Amino acid sequence: MRHKYTTPGIVLARSPLSEAGMLVTLLTPELGLIRARAEGLRKSGAKLAHALQTLNESELMLVRGKEGWRLTGAVLAQDRFGMLSRSARIRSARVASLLLRLVRGEASDPQLHQLFMEFVCALPGLSPEDEDSAESLIALRLLSALGVDAGSEPPEGYGVDAFSYALENRKDLIVRINRGILASGL
Image 1 (cartoon, rainbow, N blue to C red):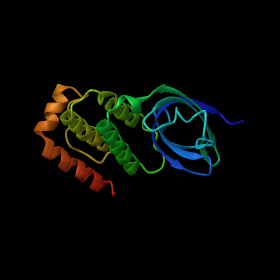
Image 2: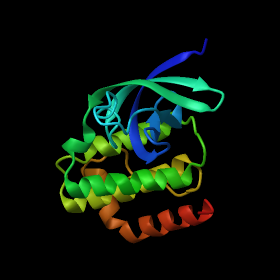
Image 3: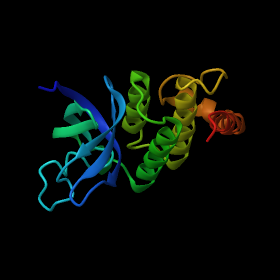
Image 4: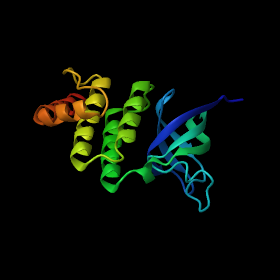
């Protein structure tokens, strides 16, 4: 009998896998970044469809098999997608895409989940200028967490101090982000 894992997680991406199945990329605090098969997700009226929409935070039930992870259940905890404006969704998608590019395979680093969740939770209600600063900050923090940025850490969180730091050092942050991406080999 296989062990069932129950963990909170956020859906970063989905891609078709079979006629009715999907490959769902999840970011969890305990298991890290994983990809799991979700059978029947593409059928109309699928029970797990709402809980497994991109950027939704859910309580996930997973089983590890010989061919990888399989989703056996999901309960929606927070509809993050619905809470975000169109521009915030685009920024979240870019950050998720960056994270997926930087992390090949699976990674069990709980800091990645914490950083991404802080970013997504901070986005609602930010001005477009602050959204831009938040995107730069999260990109730099992810690169630092993955060990491809050795520069000084910006102020924590997404408050006034962090945004003023990002605005004052915008060119330097972009150079560091680009160097980090280049250093990662992508």
